[in-house]
Amino acid sequence: MHFSAKLEEIAKAIEEMRIRGATPIARAVAEALTLEAEESRASTPDEFIREMDGAARRLLSTRPTAVSLPNAIRFVMLRVLSAYRNEASLDELRKTAIEAGREFLRRVDEAKKVIAKIGSRRIVSGDTILTHCNSSAVIAILTEAKRQGKDIKVIATETRPKFQGRLTAMQLAEAGIPVTLIVDSAARFFMKKIDKVFVGADAVASNGAVVNKVGTSMIALAAKEARVRVFVAAETYKFSPETIIGELIKIEERSPEEVAPRDFLERYPSISVRNPSFDVTPPDYIDLIITEKGVIPPQAAYLIIQSEISEVGYEDYMKYTTYLEES
Ligand code: RUB
Image 1 (spheres, protein in one colour):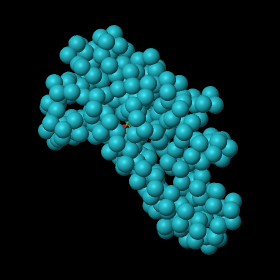
Image 2 (cartoon, rainbow, N blue to C red):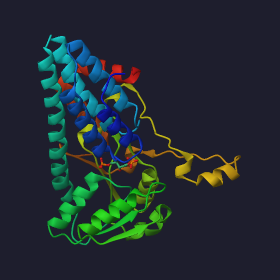
Image 3 (cartoon, helix red, strand yellow):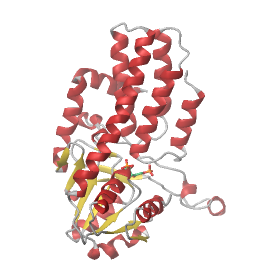
Image 4 (cartoon, rainbow, N blue to C red):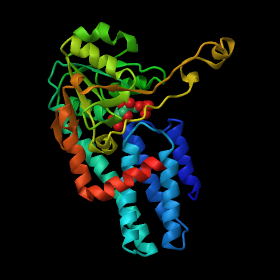
């Protein structure tokens, strides 16, 4: 495959979770493709396309669940491939890729600001909010609510096995929001004290099911039992177009050593470990999804996907979807 050493560095950082979370992953992917185009040494349009294609495939192979990753690639590559079909020169192709990458980043940053504003309207002074894992969209909503002078408290789950909840607790504490860290299994114990649950998303399916850090679905179940409302903060680039043609979102399974230390696993070779990184919360357990296009009931997820597709045209969109699936 043809791509640069810098792109390989970014791909490795995503694989090893030094870059993690659906939005930071999408940003890193758009930045990597922009960089690849800027520094490409290709001397013909064909060579440039091969290089960008190799880069896209390498990025795609890093983590399978966050749909923001293929969506970021699709955003850039659909525009590059369309210019290529229209016989663009090498310089024009390079420019198209760089502009598409930058436009995607601009939209990501704008979406975050809008979600923070829209989401914060759902929070009132006195609320105690439970969150799971570390979502930049949720942090943006909570810090915006705090900035508006709302007096809120947060309970953050530690989020085994990688403890992303500690990042959340740190970021909220730095923003001056009182935060209590709990073990994941204490979520139901505290549910009576919770006014609202806010979580992020790695993917939203066309039926409104939300894929997020493993444990989210149990929290949503406990919330439903206690009649606590569940809000999901998800930018539109986390909605999965593939799910409208029946594809399932792949759930990443990570190393057993994240769950138990190597010497324990070696001492008891008959013990097997499963470590799914995400789970699926059905739409019935979600009250609202907060997107930059507005707040929607999960059942309206299909409409968001449709409007994303109509921006580039159904045929091109689906053609590239098939290409992504086959690669
Ligand atoms: C991160 C995770 C986050 C979503 C949303 O999982 O589940 O809740 O990605 O994050 P991991 P954001 O740590 O395994 O990547 O709102 O920042 O996109």
